[in-house]
Image (cartoon, rainbow, N blue to C red):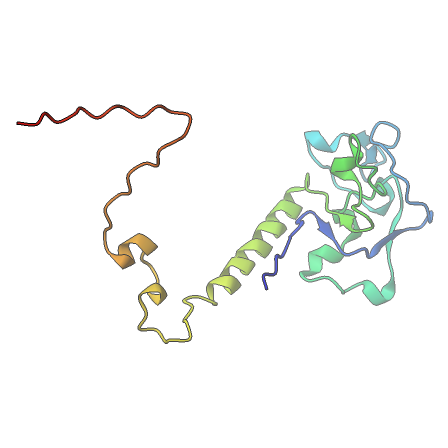
Length: 178
């Protein structure tokens, strides 16, 4: 049995809820982001300092969930778009929550840096799984790390190209009999 782990890196568990108790998508044109002074800004041109009142909806995290996500910066509701559920059309496909999963505000440099740290940590953890050993022990050729598979087996002669049905084959000259 094979198990595929699909990682959607810009969505997290649904822990951010809105004080308005509504979840329909609110567009940037109708509901722009506001900086701490209440001035509207376009996040594609850079993100200004924000607080909980800067979003189309007022984000809230329940007390029981305040420290549920690791690393801790994921528990900050200002790290998310907070625009409501995606309709999977237009801008909502980029900035909306995915079926309840909270959409990270990837226009923020600190979100990008935090995701890089998470992925680096994941790579270090996966690297700890190598080298793998078969049930026959480490003496098997395919268990030697650091060598490409072809080199482990020895240099093999390249295979001739396969004949294709749609390409005519060149005729071989006939040998003359003596």
